Length: 262
Image (cartoon, rainbow, N blue to C red; front, side):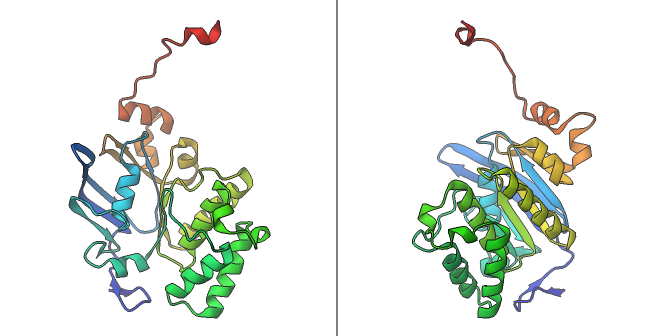
């Protein structure tokens, strides 16, 4: 067994993320329907699916933000719901529309969260400065989070996910509302994280981005995982776009809207 640096044992040979039979219902609607997913350590894994397919709900249950109605989620062998504190020490999360302390600046937010995680003050200060510089947030030094743009909020949330050097990053649409220059920077950060032995699970609607970054991919549709494996295996001889349309059973139509050409 390998120590995770916090006094809690994490199984070094266990998957970075293991989901077994995850189920979530909202009233009569089954949003996630018995999802099984294994992400080995050291992978850059992309999770794709149509709007409303269950991606965000699945990831929320995987990281302990939403309690499942059935099944289990494990981070490096640690049950997220049986031992949430130990599991959350190992992960950095960028959820969809994460609520942030609005009346803090970016630096104050990172300092506050670093202290909550028990990091040494000098470590918090150094990492905060580096993250603000790399993510180009230093010019907003006096700007409160409540006044951040959508892209800035996405970047400061990513900074909070990276601050404590997690072993697994779970990122829900991390490039949404991000400008091209910042997106290029974030791509390099994530690629280096994986090269150094970290694991990333990323959800995105942009197939070209997933093809560029990810070596493995899962496709979710109507709450079920309909495909999972190496990128080349899932997309076959065509593009990931083509495979996606085929796997989710989408119907592309050009009928109607004739008035647009009038």
